[in-house]
Length: 106
Image 1 (cartoon, helix red, strand yellow):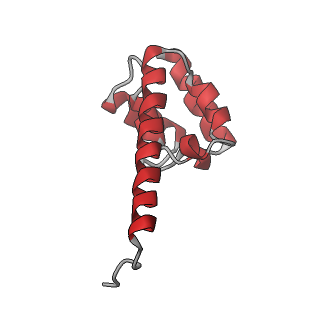
Image 2 (cartoon, helix red, strand yellow):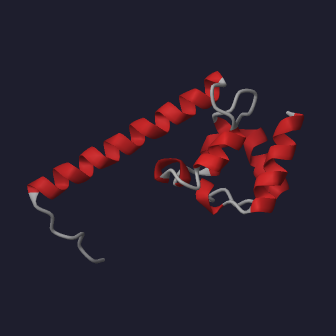
Image 3 (cartoon, one colour):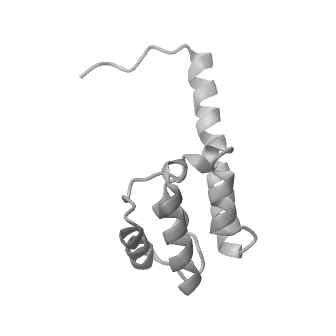
């Protein structure tokens, strides 16, 4: 197994800070989804330009929606033909439309 690249203390610190900032941003987005201040459709549009949103897993985003738990989220993904590991930026147009259509029924 190859060793990770050797980083200086400064590089390691910068990487840790960047990772922490990304985690905080994802948590804020999920909280906005839970509170209803952001919709899934808006997040889909935002994923095209925002790197943090684009790299979030669709399953995690769906689970953050009100009235959608782990089981419903997986059922929505299955209906739309989306893998559990798919990221927001990787959703195709048809997949988005199917998810939005099913979410309207929930």
